[in-house]
Image (tube, rainbow, N blue to C red):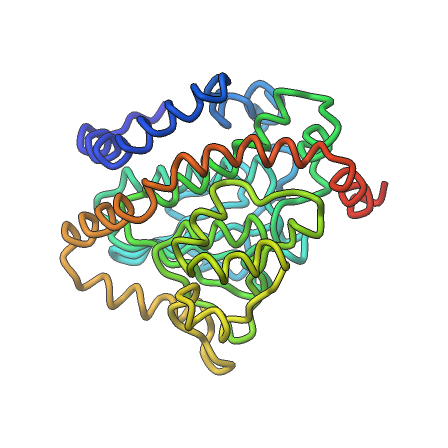
Length: 333
């Protein structure tokens, strides 16, 4: 069992005090318990798989394009790896068997664990989050067994895991002390968009697409997506994405503040993200972390009550007829 340092616990407590107070009030108003952790639910749901170091919905070894040197960190499934170069960490999550690199509950758990690992590394000042070579992330995996359990209300423990797994991953990445950069190739849709929003900066390939397809799938965005999107780009652009289903290219997203830098055809996206990381790496680490924490406390913490309410909305809409039909179509059922 990993034990965080006193400093990590102190930073986490200070940074999340407002979140906890607001969250308890909202949860109490809905008369529902604060759910068990995703890690606990995964262990209960798939104990044999955990013992074997394999969890359904994930793949084997990480991306073959990673450096030959062994990673500083690898999840039990191999789907998430961390490599380091000085004070810069690169976190890659990849499912090579799936073209759009979708999220599963197990992968979300691994992403949250990777962010917590970074929080225990005072030597890391900057972290880059990147997906596969073809897509940052196309959203939640509608073929996952957990999504079926959520839609059909067939397994309440697994349904709770699905509803809360993304929120835990997003919060872990939002609050991890290093400054974070999302390097976006291809798509950042649905859950992939909110994972990108959980980072402090976003670098994208020219033509990369950002969007919320949930409205056409019969479900609402979860994991605190809409409050974060409003904070990032403003209410009316967020309305167009969430209600009209508009998608933005990297070029359209940049003036709104959703994308900070765009990689043209000659520059790999990850290289541009590393260049930004190098700019940050020469700055004093303590002010970097303090400024990040204060900015999050100012812009994101006040949105926590809305983020908690969307767990109910996400679960309720997932059990509607429209989403069940769409899920069955995607799953081939």
